[in-house]
Length: 553
Image (cartoon, rainbow, N blue to C red; front, top):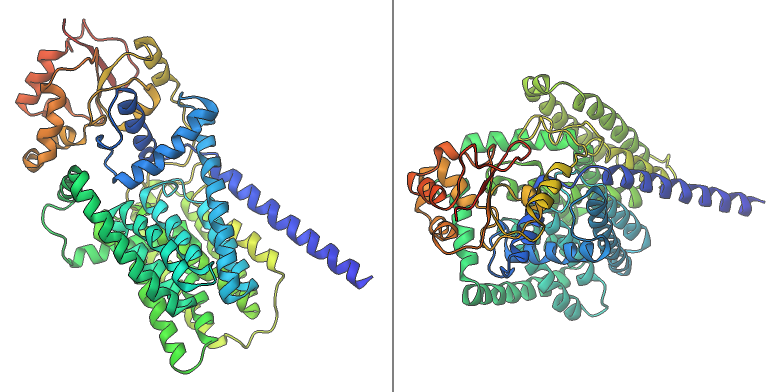
């Protein structure tokens, strides 16, 4: 009878965990893909239809990311066609979820072989949930893709029995972490650090393999894709007028952004305490080595955000995934820590849900005390966990942790909650919008009618009309209209060729709230007027904020 009761409890627990995970994933799947992702899709799609090779088109993202997104988008087109819609967005999500599940399954196998089944289950489950129930602004961004690839690198390094084979397989994956966006190279260091926690010999071999593959990637790009380096340098100049250095005001912005991350993702506030209880399990020098690894790992996860200098929430994607993995490991390996982390997690999540529903003006005005409160909470909870680790004997069933983690993932994905608490995009709510007016405009112009876009790539994605310009979303012309220094970079002159060289474009699509025509350089304005008639009488009716100008005969 007791065995039967125990089996029933396990079955009910597993069912509860699965239902909680499915509910959280469904909630995260409801919003639109974020604008940056639809930008990348739109530029790839419309330039591709115009005959531009993916190797030649500019998508404001490195080649590795373009190829990754192109592969996912081609799968979506095969399944539901090439019309932008909510169904198409959902298919892209489902494709990505299948990929995540495959990576997490491999992670479970690798960690189980080295660290045992409980650690593997806790780490794999928490990491998988963090990737799937991801904030809308994180999902499929290059920084998020880098985090996914870092998890894969850890998985393939640990799975083979022979260390050299794991290193051989993990090296090219870690190289892709760097290649997907150059500023994400610290995420590759995190992957190597995590491998070292499990097996230092594997970490050494994987590091050597990674260095070799990064060298091969560098040689291939410089030899066969020299424009990639030009674009990378010009993009860096776009963000930083001078080479990046350590400025005090940038450090202050980073601290504020960390607090914002904790409000949006409470699991980050719990991670220091989880790391503390894991470190306390060790003794002597290993304990201090563990503390150093935890501090260095967390600091490295912040490096992409600081290096890019904009402190967008998705720049912290690896921090969120790493925090979830650490919490999963602590929950699995330290049973006495389970009820404190569940209670603290639910408390922090409840506060976040309330705070994120406050008016935008209030959130901006109160950002300093709120973010300080979360950071102080994280520190105090970590200190308490350090001193009480191992003394608590009351435990909780494993499935309670899954449910608690699912709840903790909800603040950034609930409809109406903002993309961030008080930093950039704090006024943009999570939600679903329709591209139907833009889709209809594309149909009116003719699905195969070539155009020239002066728009952000989301417009391209919705309209779908082909373009033969290799800068389908002309960021250099757009920024050159606003920043004089951008008119001096090589990419600006190359982008200008879309107006100076022969083209089959029959219409000009101007997104007025993105491309500020009145501030356009005189020579660019003259070229536009020479090729297109933007007089009020000639304009094609279009939804706001677009202006559609026909080509002059």
